[in-house]
Amino acid sequence: MTRTFTTAALALALLALPTAGGAQDAAAVRAGGDAVSFGADAGEYTPTGIALRGRAEIVQGQNRLRADSINGTITGGDLTRVEASGNVYFVTPDQTIRGDRAVYVLADDEVILTGDVILTQGQNVLTGGRLVYNTRTEAARMEGGSGAQGGRIRGVFYPQSGD
View 1 (cartoon, rainbow, N blue to C red):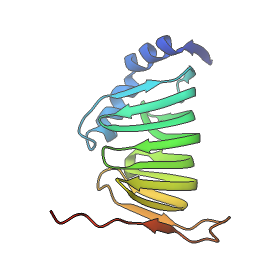
View 2 (cartoon, helix red, strand yellow):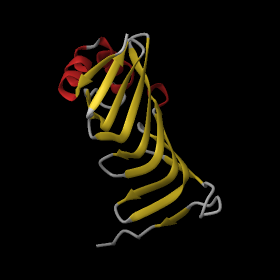
View 3 (cartoon, rainbow, N blue to C red):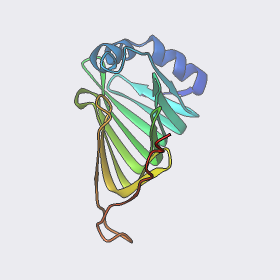
């Protein structure tokens, strides 16, 4: 059975679920053990997943995933996979990554963004069609895409001042 909640009711329901605790035990420990919080204009919960719509976001520690919609898969009581689509932003303290879609498999510690991907870190900018970002090591691997860039990645890097 699917239930539709308002933002406040969804947030309270999700925080009370064993799924949130399971996600903390399985993957959040590697991310510093921080709680996982959710927000959206509307959402649904089923025993196998969550769906957040409209200004959807998931926050853990200093990392934030924002998108038009976010769907989470629950397996064995744990949040195991998150898919985001539409105006996707993955923001860390040092980097902002923008894409059309994102898939985050918590056990892999990797967020994969596709579409017109833009990675910024300070003034540095890297663009391409697909980015794999490791949330544990903070390593990023960009691949070219199709379209205007012709399958190439592009970047602009500014040297650090030697003051």
